Amino acid sequence: MLGGVGAATRGKGNVHDGAYDRRVMRAVSVTRNGGPEVLKVVEVNDPVAAPGQVVVTVTAAGVNYMDTYARIGRPGYDAPTPFVLGGEGAGRVLAAGVGVEGFEAGQRVAWKSARGSYAERVAVSAAELVHLPDGVSDETGAAVLLQGVTAHYLLHSTYAVQAGDTIVVHAAAGGVGLLLTQMAAALGARVVGTASTEEKAVLALEAGATEVVRYDRDSVPDRVRELTAGEGVAAVYDGVGRATFEDSLRCLRPRGVLVAFGAASGPVPPFDIQRLAPAGSLYITRPTLAHYTRDRAELLGRANEVLGLVATGRLRVHVGGRYPLDEAQQAHRDLEGRATVGKLLLLP
Ligand SMILES: NC(=O)c1ccc[n+]([C@@H]2O[C@H](COP(=O)([O-])OP(=O)(O)OC[C@H]3O[C@@H](n4cnc5c(N)ncnc54)[C@H](OP(=O)(O)O)[C@@H]3O)[C@@H](O)[C@H]2O)c1
Image 1: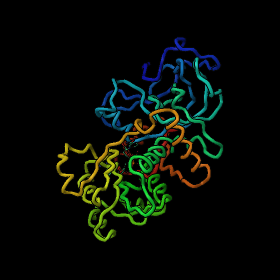
Image 2: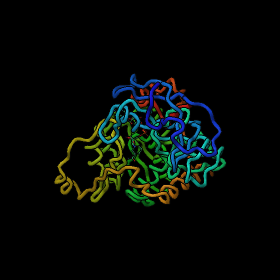
Image 3: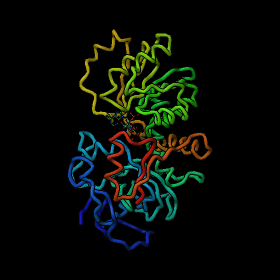
Image 4: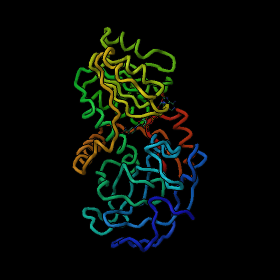
């Protein structure tokens, strides 16, 4: 039996209202850093709610690209192995530790950041938990919280998209991409999406992109210049990284912003900032979710806005794949193999 992150020995915490007896649970462990094959379903100790924490029964865990970085051991996402993978999920409150207020057994909740979420149960800091409203299922909550809050801060705070802006969204049929595309279109932006297949291009168009460039075969900067009368776009949202970085710079108008928010194709190599001046006094930022959900008020403000859009049908959440815990390896293979659209879920 492995003791993973998020797993603690029963009896050490302060469970005051959770009458659950199970001592072990199933979870997906990163046994060592490497490819998808290092993911194994193991039995670990049931988590215990430490002060300020809530133990939740996981209905659905979100699979995020950053989970693959943690599995590989990429700097900034790494942890000592073995550890239970996952960060995002939704489920029911099982027990609350001392000092927790506002969360009762049975309530439906979601979270974006609790290591160990690829499991039947997980201990989550109460500061991370969000109540799910009626009209948002557990699966949808797990599918939208992290990526929806990400799309929210990228569009409202990293670069504040204005009605009439033209922007590029790379991997527009992906998990973050479909949400960015819908939310930007709703703000009145003209979205030029990119995608690697026809099926993905159609999905991005349905989400509100006005144009989708097949970046596996066509030049994105050339098409952008045609569409903007040579001007270029206000912002490029780039979660692809190494493969698209140079083209993203070439898409921007003077004083445009490259929002380099991820690295699905690998990290961007070191860059000489002197290049930004002749290219148009450009801006580049490498934002991360934690710095845009710095306190509970900021998290709840963004999360409740996103969940409200979903509950009222103004934001559609596309679940592109559901996998049992035993198929976590396959979920990672599919995600890294560019074989997926929208969001992937693990259903414990
Ligand atoms: N900074 C933040 O706060 C934050 C938060 C959440 C996510 N992210 C980042 O956002 C990005 C998207 O995450 P996601 O979970 O929504 O994943 P995703 O977009 O659903 O999947 C990645 C997509 O990237 C595209 N891609 C292009 N080149 C690729 C390559 N060489 N290998 C794999 N994929 C490639 C593929 O779409 P095509 O087939 O259409 O090319 C693929 O489907 C990731 O970089 C992630 O780390 C950042």
